[in-house]
Image (cartoon, rainbow, N blue to C red; front, top):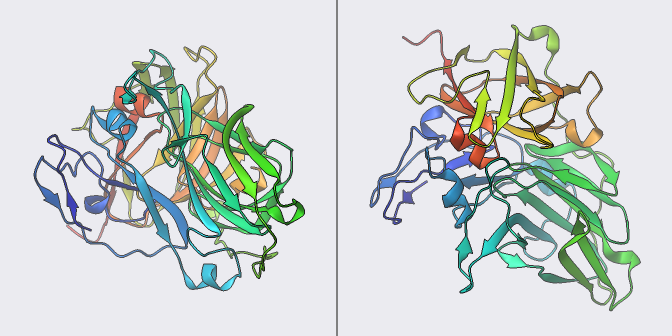
Length: 375
């Protein structure tokens, strides 16, 4: 990758969801000075997935993302191409990058963060447009949904309450499609869904909404040939074995606004909070305390450089659409989420709340993955 910084200020590019060594991760240790170019080299060695990238500089991540520094990184593999899914990019395979923004009178972005919850915009944007429409045929359409907002959760559904399939989560395809009427997606998370428009008539209009607010509109065109399928099986997912975990760690997310901590401490760039041996499997119990939550629904939690699996939510089995590979998980107020994670790459990595304003205020830690055979 060749990343040229023409901003006039420092930045970085974090490959969110990519499993790479710490030196290529693009976190706050890989800052690119104004006018400089960063040239990381890495091998992509993970299943097909919808990933994304964004800055990760201490103090300016939130505002740089808000003003436009984010994009998609799509991985394909032989399995994903062999399933018969809609995969003609831009035709029946469409990205939907969801964000929210406020505007000044002249149409420029207005970045305002409240003291508690982060930056919430007045308008929902899809791929940079307010309430856009897409003309679709009477066919199956695949949508790669990315929550690229600074702080807003989305609760997506079709206004007519029609069902659709979720086929993938953050780290790639699920084992089997999940039929659903709604999709909850928090900042940093991704989901791939398939909507079958064959039941609609030409001229119909279908709305995608979140909390009864219009997100976008689908305008149904004429009938056309559709050879795509939603197969009963999508992928084989290696289930990480709890019996192989070397231990359990607790991650406590606490506070709102500037009064946020992770395990009772604010982020310190010069402090390694945790050391992990390369290849180790661990169980993490992630909790949010009720203190200072002030009605907030919770925190999305992200780990760099790896994908994990959710074991339980408050002791209950996770929903079917959360049983694939994940790199971001939403932890509700007063909830405990258990995950199992394996660290396959060396280096220093961040783990943090993905409400960008909370991350910047200190709700972040860093771990070092060490190869015991290398001095």
